[in-house]
Image (cartoon, one colour):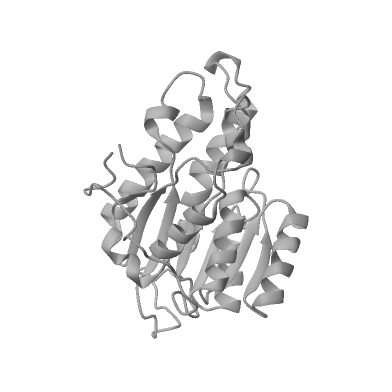
Length: 267
């Protein structure tokens, strides 16, 4: 599978984050209450990052915040935002808040998704189609456009000139061999659109690293919805994918710039 100009790559054998891997890097996690978002937030906090937990459901975010705060006081903040209904102005407000509180943004992980289950295209309600596009494609575009200066875009002067490595942007993709098949609907189309957005962004931005992450099958609500006959509890949790996300968000991930980090089992 191609991403940008590069082939897919593998996580370096034996790589594991430590307490200094993301030392003081400011990381925004969109979809922080989902399986991968939650695991990534915990992994990033353990790796020394300062985490902005962005999501729609406040109670899961508060629970995650309390868990991080107990182990790493002051490492996390909550920013509730419903990506399905957010407008460009909402992302401008987000960027203004980040600028005021942190003065920069060192990484963004897009772990948010919307999936209504397998169904024929003809049966998808227009509002459900639009919601999937809004969450999976439009939200990353609006967020990155609003936060371009915080990520070190050349049109802005970063407040913190001590950034030790370029900002990292991580898009979580899905297997196109699966999602391009019948009945994957708006989710399948949106994920392919997200891949295109990542590729274009990589081609245009040289001041920030753009990455794509393709997790292996893991225990999640989305997986249970798509494979309702499968024993999802027999799958691994999201911790392995979260460690890979930390790798891409860290300076060490520079080797995977513009490439797809594929976590699936080798053929």
